[in-house]
Image (tube, rainbow, N blue to C red):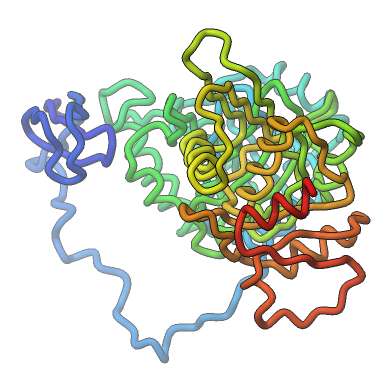
Length: 455
């Protein structure tokens, strides 16, 4: 019989302590310990799990271990396959996190419906079977091999898996699942950790891949203990603005592939559509003759695409200038404004500056720096930038244009979309041997770029 005991868990890293502490000794965070009631097995009636009598595995040398690469499961989704590293690995556990309403359940259900040759089980702990049926009807794909069950008890979930023998399991979401072995409520640290460990053990023993959907906190991190991300094989982050139609799927952790890959989707009435060439969608508007708009050659993951950076500079109406940024780090924008004022001599300290990355995307590529300061200066001077020129380059604190990575991909993407010239850092030409039709112009400092754009 299970005895109850009270223990304290760190909500940040999952560290366990018999008493409350103000500061976690493992991760150093303050005020993160929460109390949980957990079940403790009675050792007088049950066999000691720490005994060595039931050892089944044997130590092997590296030469004796077979390392044949297993074929991945093709999910019939170019973007998802790319982010996973080529497809879904058998016996793997994938965690997908994102804000409420961003499209996590739609993405996973849509993926299952596209696999008529694979028997799959969709376990829902948040929605009824009718709600899932309505979403499937909106997506418009029929698949009789996709089974749906509404269950939150972990033991019952394993029973359904045993009865249906699926080839792929989806659990939506891990925070709603609970185990009878623990007395704490679903979603608590101990429950999430216990259920995740049990699901991982099941996946490794059976060879069936499992996809988990997880909630996130207001800071944007996966809810639950940090150990949840260490348990699973792959962690994917589904992000985007609900007011825009674009969604980005990022790989935060991937034991079977690169974490630099991203997938881009477009949300519409029939689900999520893969965006194979995002540049054409992000550059559909004609801004010829308008100031404050420049085109940047950016890299997101390892994918190049061109994106509009929009800036608006106006006189501060209330004495204290406002600084606002959408889709770009506002602290980096303030740094670029300081460079403009100190190194280039443009007085912007008494002006409002508003920056927007078109399409609702959030981009952290430092190669946007040159495009951003050009758009800000274009709005301040009210002079438009030639729409056939695109820019890329990182701006340093001394006003120099620093080289960026994957310059060849950026240039080829600009050439493919019909741009006549591109401004790049001078040091990026070292080792560049590709023959292109686009005119490549190099700049070393921000003053050279401004002379070229606003001469």
